Image (cartoon, rainbow, N blue to C red; front, side, top):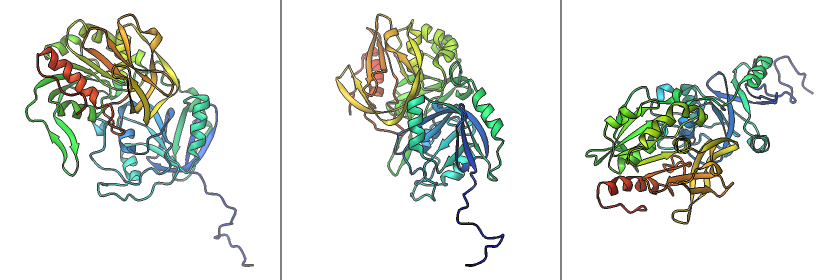
Amino acid sequence: MAEMTAASTPAWATEKPTALLVLADGTVIEGRGLGATGSAVAEVCFNTALTGYQEILTDPSYAGQIVTFTFPHIGNIGTNDEDIEDLNPAARAGAVGAVFKADVTNPSNYRAGTGLDQWLKKRGIVALSGIDTRALTALIREKGMPNAVIAHAPDGVFDLDDLKRRAAAWSGLIGLDLAKEVTSGQSSVWRETPWVWNEGFGEQAEPTMHVVAIDYGVKRNILRLLAGLGAKVTVVPAKTGAEEILAMQPDGIFLSNGPGDPEATGDYAVPVIQDLLKTDIPVFGICLGHQMLALALGGKTAKMHQGHHGANHPVKDHTTGKVEIVSMNHGFAVDADSLPSGVEETHVSLFDGSNCGITLTGRPVFSVQHHPEASPGPQDSHYLFRRFVNLIREKRGEELLAERA
């Protein structure tokens, strides 16, 4: 037998972990670090989408969260400058951490600009790989979304006691207004239209209507779809007052998606929406915007056990009787039993029966919990943007569009 020297590695040696996920209950999950070094405290959720990891990680609705990807192979197609969803990439609004099953490999895709690891570093996202994401998903399903610290140190040196303390001490998302952290700093006009294969994004030339979008953490593809249907879209910060919005003479008002506790954001958003509802201007809300509308109408919201995060969620539209497969990303939900008279439930999740849409009876006002813009996800719900535009066209006496082109 060859003599083992100090320089040789014993066959039983284990790899030193360079990343940790430390849960608030003290559970420590070891992995291999990638992306940014350092640590971040946040809530851990899981996402079941098979594609679109770049869109998911740049969705401002994921602010304050660490995303566990249930699909094992993430990073294969790399990253590019087109598949981002936050308005200002320099602000790096979106997930603060990511958890993968398999190690990230070099990209193999004609659209790839950089590899995922390099992109994560640039975005400041702390990530780890090499863990059993199925077990972590099962834990979340059983116990709910835990608060945690994700940490990456290339030398594998961690102050474990400090990480455990930070994870246990973080108060979590309840009562936390994150919309103010991810919203636009000033008003702007959006003109980019949807992506076309091998052509890229277009630019709107002659808008036919004006929509003001209140930005609680809006995604780019929402704005693209509105622009693609002829809307000049003016994006305004989350705390913009109703008087200022109405002075812009909008034909429609859009309430965007966003992160955090809707009741916390509602402290300043609800009074504005209530003033806007005193007019006959059509209103459309998505995700946090849906929750804001429900609160403004007298409903309530509640924290969910495991949330809805994925691109395979079945939702029924009671207005058509059809079922669509949708993209979802929310940890709070509207309590359907709290909706007052005059507010109708239009959409419902077929996974758990939770509310996914409302309309104000006899008024051009509606909202949905899911993400009809996809990016990533199926395009079954694109018709909702046409439904909104039709409310504007109907008010102006114009011919209506077919909801499903």
